[in-house]
Image (cartoon, rainbow, N blue to C red; front, top):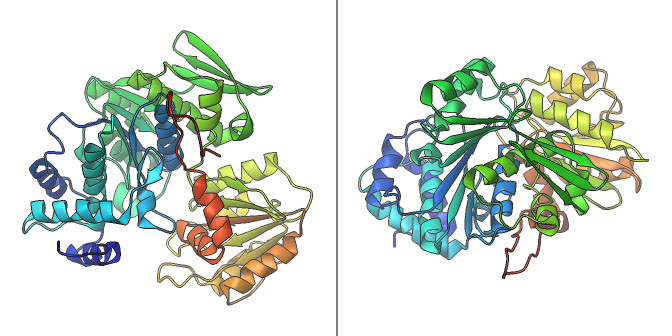
Length: 445
């Protein structure tokens, strides 16, 4: 074996390919075929793309499938604390040793061909899912869709969540252009679930031109919450489940993303064991850091929202779920993001702001962020140069009855979790496995 530890393998992958972001399917397809990962005998595939919501849809799709007693592989990105979070089998992150075995097999198969860090990960996921005998693999697109590594596999069911402006350098600077890239995961004659009520015309046109079977939110399926029940409509059929816990509090994007996940499961034809209990647990799972509420004094809300659309949903959620005490923003953003509309969307929702410094070249300096927030008229902007001090001051400002909102980037949420092991353990348990019939149902939050 070339390396004996996961850290060595990941360091090697970061340096192997001359370009970190290299959108093409040529390299990964060759290696996947050498490994026999596209010969039609492996797991069925559900592939999820979108600007926002795709991690939640992928996670809840996997949970719903597990509730049907299926063995399920889930590939998501990025991770928050440990690389292993990206590849889960029945909800459990794979081990370091399993990843090392997969990377060694990929390294042997690639020969002199280089692969990117993300391509290594996608191949490792597929290799491990096949080894584990997964019936279905749920693959979250990393960037775009058409040229993303996971699009090397043909989706039995594709899903596209909300489409908005982000990563314009690679995907285009309009919703239509970005939608066209995401539509590339569709396959002729196969279902595509469109989770947005008004998807870009380019998505609809591509589906029609390709002959994909479109299932549209609001037309072909819908999910409503009413008095502790979820009312599900799929085509002409209506189902009703009495739900508890987090599933009984779904609203806004969380409700719409759950509907999209249910539609994917319907399109895969796996609905036999959906019951009050399994739906409650599966739709109560959380993709870590996505509008994730962690109870305590104060309450913590973790949200990786890092673009205007996602921050708009965060603002809506805060307005719909007030707390009795102050709401404090613990925030850091990347310098290449459009920021002014974010601060406008959150006006009136935060009682204080604590910019947290990140040791990352792409990050906007905390002092510059503080200047922007003050210029935008945001209240009580704090200026601190130490992350632990930021967290301490945020907790003091929120008090026992308040809320701390951690948002702005995956890196922001990760930085906070790295400093608070108890918080991290609670956050990452939300993506734990949901057992199916005969295996029990456990560990879902």
